[in-house]
Image (tube, rainbow, N blue to C red; front, side, top):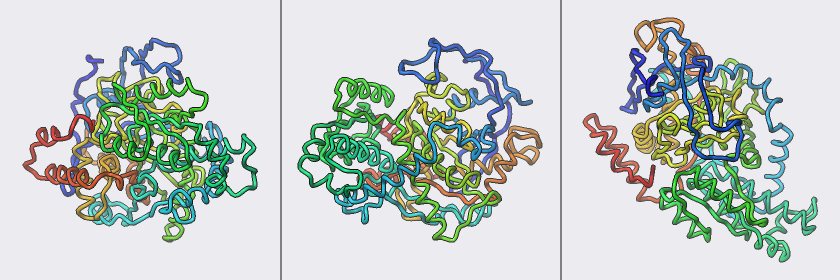
Length: 527
């Protein structure tokens, strides 16, 4: 691999808007490279229980005339846009996926059936609805519509204001916990199919039954919050397995909710593996597996009903000519994959979904580009998998999410940590909205598309004029799409942490900012 890490010799386009300006190399499509040599220690890298690091050799032969290589660009930690050439007709590929529309409809009905339980446990959810507002993002509209020739209206899905745990993880974690509680009561004969589910909170026998069961999860924080809070609310015990280096305030918040936090050496993957192994020893412990849980993904997918309804209320009509372009932060991949799949189920090819990942942890991009899914880690190409966006600091993607997204996700772009903080500060300053650093990755989406769309002009990118892969797709999405940025969390961040993040972003926006010194202020525990 070291012998292939050489410069492409091309120039990268740059852009600027309020200094939130990463430099994006021109994008690669799925046909850009072939892997002539890829040798793994084990036979089936795509789906396996063994999570130990893989040792392999990579020789990459680029097929473009400038020999730009995805696996050469990623280790350089520069912002990068990859367009998925396999996502030609996502609507036609839905029938070949592990999950079906009927399962999504069943999940939607279960949310409605469990609404009395949610309202009883969480007064902040009137009517038992776990929903967030869809609001116009004037910041993007004002700054980018002219310079990038974008559609004049851009929106954000504010899951940073989602009740219960203040993040998108409530859609998956709360759903899986409540489904488990309902199933246990039904199997014990303590609940009838047509009984109002509010009885789950008042029936002494059901309460006693649930108290004997434990829900466990491996998490960087937000999923642990959603699972732990939901389990405690219905009287179940909860255990969250986390890396010792995970964000401290999230651990403290979990413990304040009565959740047992077990810390492990290593990163996210090691914590998940340890939690999975511990749960397997206890028949009364249910492990919420972010890497393979279909229930989590179904919970996330039902947000599509909410988005479609909200767009209708705003009189926003999407079509093949004016598609909905959704930008979602991506870590292990469960939440963005569930949302992407759900939107395609309801909107077909009228939606295009782009994922955003840190430059240091592009695990989903690597898994999809190589085709090895969860059988390859960013550690294998010399990246650390660490990021200040703790929810995205994942070295290996979900195998289920990769299988679901192989022909659905339109593309993936990577963002540097410093650009996340710059975007965070601008969003707070111009819109009064605070989000976690991971959410700010989506603010870079228009920039990534713009660089590729403008690469057609001679001398504007690493390629000479015409023939840039994906250029027309990027231009179409940029100019004709209705952009929706999914803000996945933020309201649970303590006030002092919000102020520190904002101050760091403001300092990074200064032209004379000392980048290395400022980034050093991010504690290692946040990476």
